[in-house]
Length: 363
Picture 1: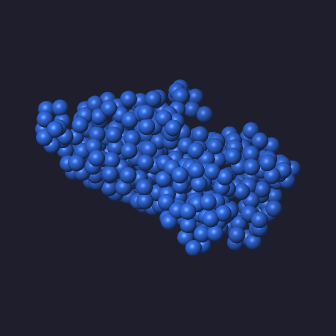
Picture 2: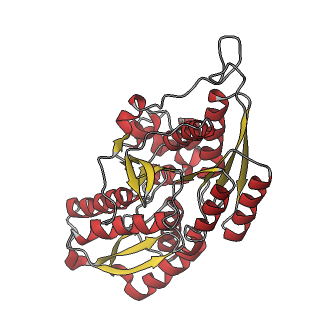
């Protein structure tokens, strides 16, 4: 755990509505903005790490951009995705600095290498918000994320509890742990939580893996090799996100394993919700991206105005807000995903999943 940083109570999702930040208005009664009555404007860069997860184009960027537009109609969001290449992300950050942006919000490809990005931007008086993934070796102006250690604990503990309820014990076999990128400190926090959840059980970790660049093909290849080695000793797979979880499921199916052992995930991607409804994936994490995207937008505007956003704790010496996510399984997918409006049934209940959706009263 993070011994060098005292962890204060986390902000629960249920409290988000009460936690909106106090912002200066983007416009006055006559359409102007700012404290001096002049219209506020500026440029905010939004740099995302990869296309391996569909969330950045589907959720993070559009939600962030919409919130910025709501807060400051004359502010411009400059979006780029590094497609898993830390060198490209460095070049993108340099390009944003050359354009003299006011704030950079960055989800780092390589959280170690990104320390140089943070320090270089700050040396040019550009404020930096680290997003989703922390950058431990540089003190950003603010960090916004869900609690990554808690994510790992939640998905692994839920899987262990499911196995217990099904009467599966440690004598029946063990678990595979499929982590995220070794260059991603958020992935390491998730893995720390996953291992913590398993260690509290009587299930052995048969093998563990850090998936380079979070790439599903790498995870699938590794799981396939472990299935060859351990066979039916594998009674569950703790995967760090929906991409690696989906890859594990693909490997299980390719090996002809039926029924499938429970497999975890994280991010509540469209395909993962479909797999949960269809019975292939055991769980995922609902961390409504709207929460962190909009919070980051509010903080970016505050920083642009020279204000100091309110933090709930310090993580890696950086003022931070961490939100607590929620586990999604077949038992609560209707309530958490559809009743809360994260997805509409039409987005998930395609022909292949129509009957399964109907069984769960999702319509």
